[in-house]
Image (cartoon, rainbow, N blue to C red; front, side):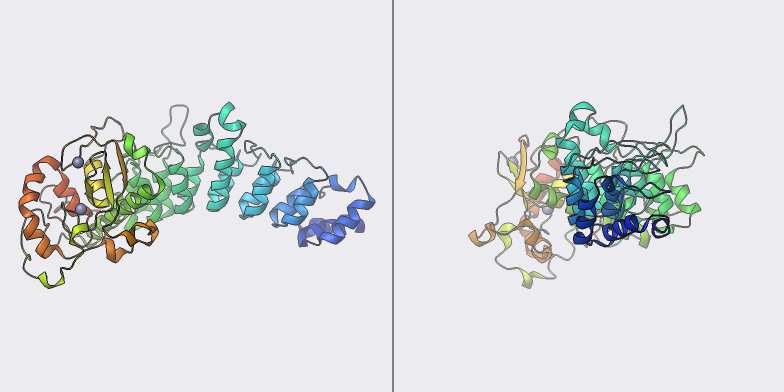
Length: 452
Ligand SMILES: [Zn+2]
Ligand SMILES: [Zn+2]
C-alpha cells in the first residue's frame, strides 16, 4: 500500500495516508474541497478509501466515509470488499460498521472465490466470524439463500469456512462454525472425487484442539480423501504424532455431542455450557489415556476398591453428589421428573459408545432414575439458596469434581446396582468420562492402542 501511494498526486497521497493513519481532521478537510476524491482508488490494487480504512481498523474514518455516502461493497482489483479486508485483519468494529451499512456477506473475491466468512475463519478472527454469522442469520441472506447454505459456503477449491479454520489451526472458529450448522463431514470434492474433510485438514495442520472439536461433532476417522488416505495417515505424513494417535481408528472412540436428540438441541445456554465442558473433559481424559498407552485405576462401577480410603473427607455437600457416579456434583436436572445427575453422567446417557456418522437415528434416552421420558434438561439448582445465584461459569471445578467416592460409594452402592441395568453402557462410558477415574476396558483398546 505504501509503494502505491507514491504514484499518486500529493493531494491524493495526503488523503490516502491520512485515512491509513486515522487522521480524521485531514481527511475531512481534503474531502470537503473535492467531491470526486472519495471515489479515488490506489493505482494498482485499486483499493478505495473504504478498503484502506477497513483494513487498518480506522473506524471513525470508515464511519465518516460511509456517511458520504459511499457504497459499502466497493471492489478492489481482486474483487475484495472492504468487509473482507476488515474480516481478514480482525477489525471487529469495522466489520460491524460495514454490516450495519448493508455490506453484502455473499460477495466472492477473484483470488480463490472466497467470502468474508472464509476470510474470518482462515485468519482465526472468531469475533468477526460470529458477527458475520449473526448478521447473515438476520438478513436477507438467510431468507433468500438459506443460512445453512451460507455457513457451508464453498470457495473456488471447494473449501468451506470450516475446512479453512481446521487447516489453519483455529479451534475457536471451528467451534463456532460447527455450532452454527457447519457440516463436519463436508468434503472439498466434487465431480465424483471424494476430496478432503475438515478432519483431513486439521490432521494436516496438526492442531489437537481442532481435531478434538471435530471428533466431538462426529467427524469420521475412516473417510478417505482423493489419495485414499484417512485423516490418521495425513497426520502421520506431516509428523503430527499426537493428532495421529487420536485419529488412529484403532484407538478408543471419543464421545460425540448428541446433537440429534431433541432435548439437546433445545438446551439453554447454561445447560449447554455445562454439557459441552463435560464432553471436552471426557475426551481430554480419553486423550490422556491414549497418549499414555495404558489403562489405569478401576472404575467405581466395577469395584468397591478404595471405599474405605478417604472417608474423612466426606462433608455436608453429599446431597449434591451425583448418585450414579458418586464423584461429581449434580449440575443437570431432568424435566419433568426433576431427577438430578452430573453433567458427565448426563452425557454418558446421551452419547453413543460407537457413533455412526452415517445414521442419525438415535433412541432417546430415558431418566435413569424413574425411566420416564426426558423432555428437557436444565441446570440443576444447588442445595443452599446462596448457590442458586451462582453463574454456571463460576461453579468452580472443585465444586464439580468431587473425589470423595468413599462413603458415598458404600452408602449408595445398592441403589446404584439397581440403576446399572437401566443405564446400560453408562458404567463404561461414565468411567471413561469421569475425571481421574478410568475404566478398565478389556475389549476394545487395551492391545490396539497407537500402533502406527
Ligand atoms: Zn455422575
Ligand atoms: Zn426421573
